[in-house]
Length: 375
Image (cartoon, rainbow, N blue to C red; front, top):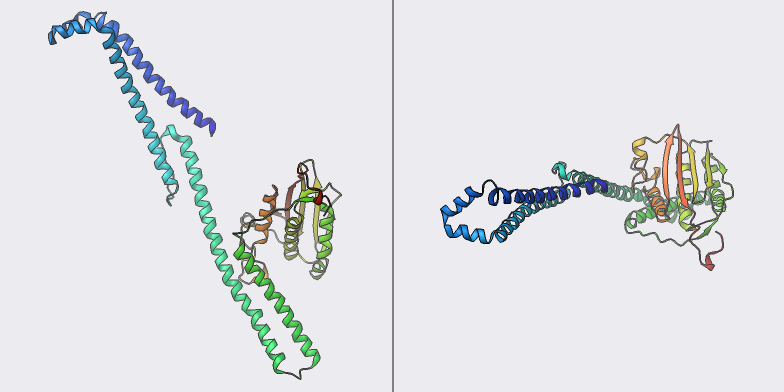
């Protein structure tokens, strides 16, 4: 694109040079032809016919008059060229205004301004796409808030109902009372989860993730997380395979990284087929560490895979919150990785879905003494 702008500038400067050259050559030719050349007598008779004094005045001030005529013609030529420049500027200004108009028609400029036309159309299309995504995100957020508010009523109604029974039936058998208390506790935990999701929705847009970096032993972190996930894996009849050789510690925020890995593991558990294995692998080169989380389940369609990191987007589009969270986990994970200068991507093929985290090693960042202890 820069090369195209350079060509455009050179073309305009070339046109200006051609105009100046033509004016100069015309002047150089006019002098010998009109004044001192083959048309000398005709030109002289023309001036004498108007006024003899005019002829003698022109003859005695020939140099000054010719210079003045040359400057006037040159000025007029420059005005014409500048007017062309001004026309270009006005067209570009109008095109810039068109960028912000909600009009699907593309911006059209003269062929000389084709590079600018391409750039402005790219900006216009990008803005339209972002506006569409923002509206879709807002719509999904509004829908999700409504769904969460509805789903909050269910456990809350159950809690009130069971507590009322416990209050009214003072002589309830101990085993039945224990059963009711257990149900109330489960519903309370569910209610807490829904309230937390609601808080995530309301604070996500204003959230700024602050990183507190230090040396992190990724091998130790992942193994510890897998130990914490063991009860959940057993509940869903899942296994786990680790291919995580010892690597050098990286400089990162351990709490935020754990949040990313926790989310990826929970997604893997939720979408894995029973009796299958979740595979976690890791490798490292001179600049980056690569961590992959793979699970066997259902192939994610390409159109959904492209949107999986959008906030408030859920693969399970049913309205019940029982089948998934607020659709913020992967969006937050992506933001955390971007804050680290890394990336997170997803691919799905042949029933296997893999999330790849690429994390800069950050060895050029020297932690403070208080941060030397490995996580």
